[in-house]
Image 1 (tube, rainbow over the protein chains, first blue to last red):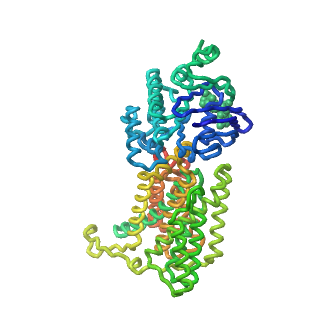
Image 2 (spheres, chains in turn purple, green; image 1 turned 90 degrees about the vertical axis):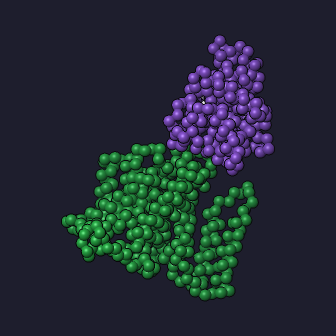
Image 3 (cartoon, chains in turn purple, cyan; image 1 turned 45 degrees about the horizontal axis):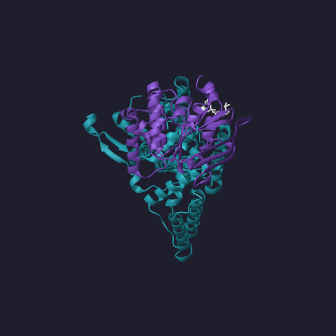
Length: 235
Length: 363
Ligand SMILES: Nc1ncnc2c1ncn2[C@@H]1O[C@H](COP(=O)(O)OP(=O)(O)OP(=O)(O)O)[C@@H](O)[C@H]1O
Ligand SMILES: [Mg+2]
């Protein structure tokens, strides 16, 4: 459905992603695992059109090569990103943040329905619908970032560290929610520090190190791979 | 010197009107600053253009001029509308072009009679053209510099401001012109206030404009706030002011929203310029400089980025100017300096402005 080939990302003189190739099949959960600075965020940012200088190709079924398109065009093709660091608009209410997520849509009823759906996924957001985004706790902001990405009714949802800053109980909850979203037919590209949980739910996984893919396989394969165990699963 | 109740009431309305005019201009500064972190020095000149456009559109048109004007608008639409190259050009676009060129042909050749537009039409026309000018200023002077260091855009702002003023001298001529005021706006309203003062012959005379200006301003600002807080483009505007990248991620075309910001700010400046020209009925190409500076100070005083703050700052400045000159006539020669004193005071006392602390209000 989405296939990234030989992607390179540069920041000035820094060569952050050095020829990554990924394949994301429709309906799957694909996860990127890797140490800090491996280039995971750079990869999804490149898909979303947020990186200025990159080469390679990103082929998206039905849209051809989308590399080089502006972020506002990419989201219209059906790829949404819940960015690293949440990026909630702090002065807008929860409701308005969700409304903004649905900016590309005009079907008022569909938007209202999806908003109720997001609120049912994250009841805490509903209680705080009229509160400014900046006054939410870190975990609540994370839920809002995920909910906001869903509001554009995307086919592919890219989640950059959705469990960051969540309490352990909520981490389990968010992984359950990711599985649930996937079961509704949405394709998911997941970036996670929590390698164990990510690999457990992933159909396919890629291990990144300093800008290159060093290992790939199904989630279960990598979960039992001794190298992965040693490097990412704490033994 | 003590003010009599009669004088107080008169000055009160004068101050309210002057302050509203400043406030309307200040809003444009504050909106553009809120989104681009840029001081649009050309904004005072946009105010001037509003006054000139209404001046030219209320005088009787020579047929040839009218035709030329219509063609110019058609060209303006062509260069400023945003046409998505991947989509078919919408029908309204061709419709508008055809209508304008058709009218141009009709008035220029088929029926070349003098045409005197009614006031209301002239006002709407002037506001629309001024808005378009605001968009053009952004497109020409600022959009190419979006990723450049902020100082470049600032220099460009000063440049475009001088350009508009001097083009004004060339095109409109530097001589001041008298604006024709409709009679109903000239005759003062006389009210007997003996009920308040107990003095049988105490009357106040208020210029109708002193009542019209605050009412129209209130209406316009309410409309603006409605757009900003209740519509989708307004949501995008509020969002862009905080985080451009994330806003784009949500599918917002930033340049369109910025163009809308310039259009709205320029429309308010045009309204202010038009009412200014009706109240102080003389216009010249540099008329925007001082009100522009003062309105900018009002925006800083109110807390730049805040729309409520800009309006409040404008009103406060209007009251200070009118009441200080009224109570101390000896100081009236320094009238234009009050704003700058106010600027120094606020920068020393509270650099973020009076509404500046409420960051969540910033646009
Ligand atoms: N805007 C930027 N300017 C310069 N260098 C950058 C920028 N963004 C990322 N980098 C560099 O690119 C490399 C990859 O960064 P990236 O954010 O993609 O890593 P990551 O895998 O997401 O790491 P983390 O797990 O810490 O989020 C890092 O070395 C980082 O320093
Ligand atoms: Mg990252």
